[in-house]
Length: 239
Image 1: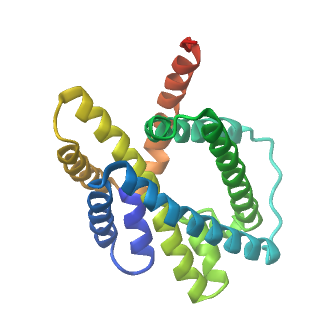
Image 2: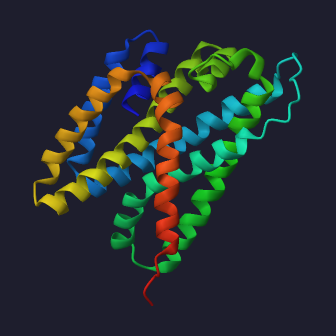
């Protein structure tokens, strides 16, 4: 996620490391307020993220590419979809566990789960549809939705790029919060100290580059998360 934030700022001409260091500062400032800071950040960012994706996707669908797509019998997308779903579910677990403690009523958790799944499913479907319609021009793009936003003009390009940065920032916040909380409990060390340590580690990993991380490490991480999901599903839940 640090590398992704850097890639967005590089796309905007603001510099790769500018994005990483600004994102690092946001992580530390927000997560020093712990769970309330994380919840507040999501309340602000998620509507912006959904609105930006909706506008760009609808515009791209309305102005589809004229080049026809070649039809193939490649079913690798099924495995890719399973991998993508698995690591996103696993990354959400630490935050969901914290929310269970803050909002223990089952009705709230179920309603939030269904609404969140529905909204994110619609957003993912629109993004997928819009990219497919412009795939011949986006095959080499590290940030295809940003390139689609450029078609609608400079103002939407900048707005969506910032929305995408916020989207990556929410994932970065959730990941850092979950790991820092776990390490704080396991070691007895201060939560804020682990936030700083993990942020520094993330900055170092960001040197690998966004495209390299997505192409080489995401599939491996997806397999690892599948194992975790199978273990969770096999574990008996106490009554």
